Image (cartoon, rainbow, N blue to C red; front, side, top):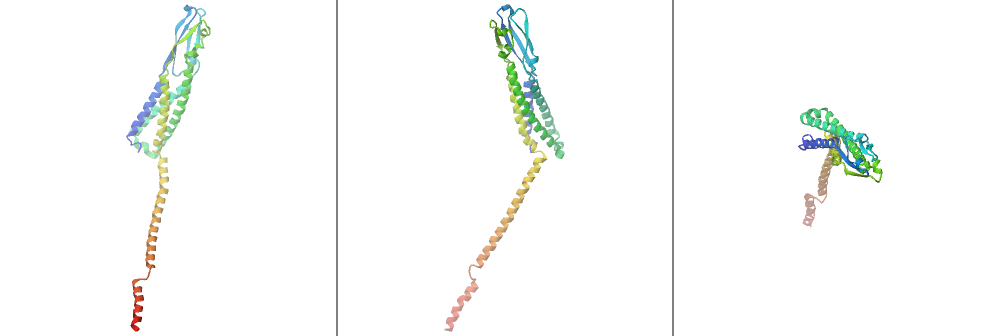
Length: 273
């Protein structure tokens, strides 16, 4: 029984923890990059230009000012792209999966009788598990593509191309440091791990539904009929063998009485002689 298994609480703990890691590593991210513009006229240079961005990665709303190397005039630049839809969808799936896992754990432990009542609880649990498995797959795939777009949009080499001062050979534009994306990469990994956990949980939840028990009865009935018919066939074969053996012994030769009568006939004939 899956619900009574000692491994069940541990499995639910993994689901809860992986959901926490998924939305924490994505929803709690904030990063940035630093650029440097060294103009031909050193007084117009800016060697420390910080560009900060964070979840939900509406990069087109991230703006910063850079020197134009043409006097004191400065250029307002914004990043390109918007990955908010995929990021927010991923975090939403993770949060709701976390809340449902907590609620399901409480029901499994403290309200197991009501959970099994009328088979309604296992059916709802099975449907929700299938839905969350699908959402984890879609959300993780979408966020992986969104993260790829974020990496391209925040690449210092790509950002430098947006500055007019960097298009002049007399000016020197460099990237001081690039954004760190390790936590975002981790969020994608945890997303697909959550999909694997939820997809694996489908079988265990299905075993608690009436569909599984009815299929087991459907498979067991033909097997029982087949075994009973086989036993009846074996009994008839044994009885047939015993009767045929008896008939063979009876027809094998004359009985001892008949043999005695046949041997007595020549003896009486010699006496007459």
